[in-house]
Length: 425
Image 1: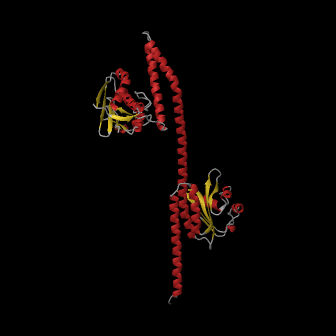
Image 2: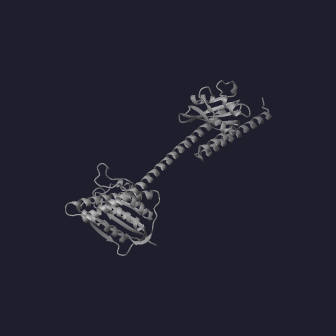
Image 3: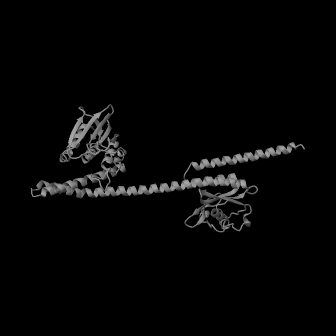
């Protein structure tokens, strides 16, 4: 029996209409995915989800309810065409509610006559003046963990069907991932803010402590120097010298703490002037001459004959050279040798300070510039200091647009601290 051409045409038209509708739904689902991937702010994510879901499902309202661990109930996080302020005041119990059933049993629900369902929680409708006739809802899951429920309410044309439930399930999966990402980002931001506050407390403490220590240290150093100058041969000189040495060491630590704090808070300002690198290096060595002589360390200089000029803040860059020399003194054994080299190329000055100490393992050539880092265990180490000298030195060099690093052939070969600094233009 031949088919009626009009009937066949009608079927084709219906299929085309269904195909267009399906393609439109897929397009909207892709739009949701793109929208959710464009932000990590929950307040912007939720309105986008419910508006798009309402269009795709062709229903009067879509609501998202998230589980509140504090109350053990579901609370409205977002909803279309309903008063958000009123919804925030409403909690939905897990028992005796459709949303609660979806959440507790991790199963979708499709109900086209809500009034006949005993689980319907009508308190919401009463408070926001909204009548629910039909409803579909699916759980929002992160892996096996249900975090909430998304519901579509009152189909505009006809009743909800299984296809609507499938579409809402896709939206729920996308929404759950987006909400979870937003929560993790919020937690990460909170942790970052807490760390920033803690870092400020630490910086304030160091600033106050170093400031308060300076005055008594100045007095101690002054009196110790006076005692040493006036001491006789009855043993007082030795005691005065020990006091002076200890106070000087403490003063160095306080200065290191202050410099590191200023670098971290970016409060360092440079007073740049043309200066010869050779002269700076030799001046710093002369400041430390007594220390080198005490350990009978021989220092050999290999300096460029013509002045190697750079623009530098002598006090701050001098601190970098001082700390590098101090590192060489600390790790060079008595009777050892330190070699100081100053050279240059077309654009940079080069400085190296090589000691004859125990050397640095290859894996620690970079970590020695970490704050408070010590090659030896703090329980067994034989060298003093807080581990701030080289980090401060590197920071000072970098402030001058230079670079600082370490080289070593390994244990027993000594170590070399190297600097490059831009030449004065």
